[in-house]
Length: 226
Image 1 (cartoon, one colour):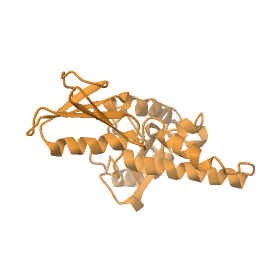
Image 2: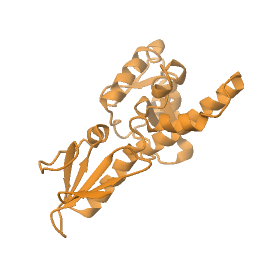
Image 3: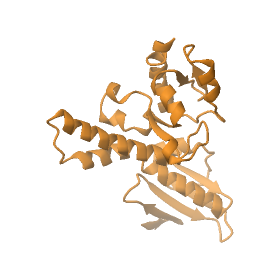
Image 4: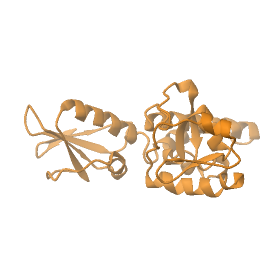
C-alpha cells in the first residue's frame, strides 16, 4: 500500500487497522508497527523505541517470530473491536424481524457469528483445558445474550470465552466463574464429583474488558448458586 521512511504499509479489506513492516537488513532484525490500540494492548509485548509510524512498534529477531505475530494481528483485526457486529448487521439487514420465529432466526445468525469470531480470537482452543476439537468447544457468553444492553455487547469477543462443553455448562449455570486472574471459582452447590471432572491446565488470559464482564457474572448467575 506504500512506503514511508523505510516502512512498507499494508492494510486488509477484512481486518481493522494498518500495519507497517521494516527490516534493519537481510538478516534482520525485523520491525512491525501498528495503529490499532486494541491490538497493541492484546499483544502485550514490550514495545521497541525505534522511530516510525503507528501507535507502537515491535522488534523480531526472526522471520518465524514475525510471521507468527502477523497471524495473531490478523486474528485480532477481524475480531476487535466491532468486526463481529458489522458482520452481523450486514447479514441480517434484509431479514424480516416481525414475528418471534423471525427474531429467533436473527438471534441464531448472531450466535453463529459470535462463535466463529470467538474461535478466531481464542485460536480454536479452550484456554483452560487446551482442548481444540471444534465439536467439544462452546461459545460461552459472560453476560448472557438476554441480559446484554444491545447487539454490540452480544457480539463483543470480550463478552465471551471459548470453553469445552462441560466447563461451558457449569459456567452458563453459574456453578463456576473466574477471578480476575482467570482462575476458576466453584460454587458450593457444585458436587465434589463434578468439581473433580472440571479439570484445567492453566488460567485464562484475560483483558480488562473480560474482567469487567466477569464482575457481572460473579454478581449474578454465580451469586445465585451460593
